[in-house]
Amino acid sequence: MSNLRVKNQSHRIRRHKKVRAVISGSAEIPRLYVFRSSKHIYAAIVDDKTSRTLTQVSDLDIKKGLKSEKAGLIGKKIAEAAKKIKIKKVVFDRGGYKYHGRIKQLAEAARLGGLEF
Image 1 (cartoon, rainbow, N blue to C red):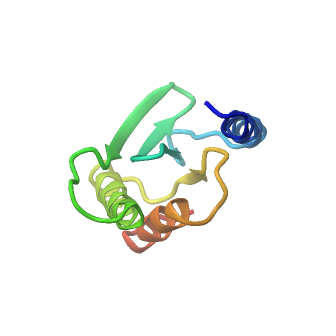
Image 2 (image 1 turned 135 degrees about the horizontal axis):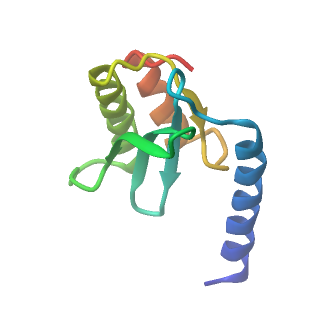
């Protein structure tokens, strides 16, 4: 790994720890967590009080399309999965990533799908 990549990743982890010190999900308002790798994007709804993942989706089964388009699809899928388990409100945890690009696409699609945050 190059030094720049390690530096950026350590900055992201530090930002994420600061956010997680403040944000926590509960049974009433769980946390929508996003993880982004260089190829894929993952989203999960988590209840931090009981340390349970309520639902999760990823783009591993989506074969075609741009990464930003896949992020939008994941946002729609996580909103649909949340509706099935009767969740309307969540706390958005962007995982230390900047709110642009794929993270923004996922968040906006989840909002259009019916999630409130």
